[in-house]
Length: 168
Image (cartoon, rainbow, N blue to C red):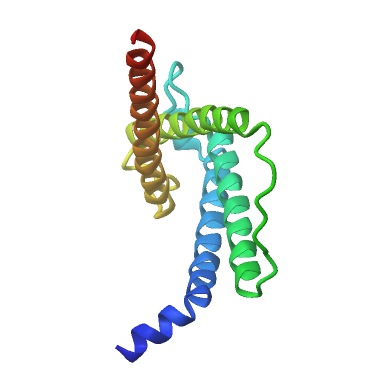
């Protein structure tokens, strides 16, 4: 119980340590994707109509790294009490929410698609593809598929509610 209380009081340290571990995993996945471009058995086994967009998956890893870095900065700032509550203006917030939702929808959908292609196109006998990093990409694809479906269902639910409200 004492250990649990100690961890809870110093949870920001645990979050930073886990974030640093995640950072190294994301860097390793990025290097793995970079190496796939030169992997002969991977390149030869690409279907002409369904090519895996390695550049987009690398871009996604960079987005994850930037997001993780921002998270680490915010956790550090929160602990050092540099952030003060400021309500600010909400001008343009609706446009920002809609735009970010659409961008997030596109990114999660395309990462899901690319991860599924990587799963179906990777051959078991291709040694440069069969590394632990591909499972991280599969996990990212699975969670992005869940996010994608949640956004789609939420948007459909909102449009359904709006359509019922407009009929009255």
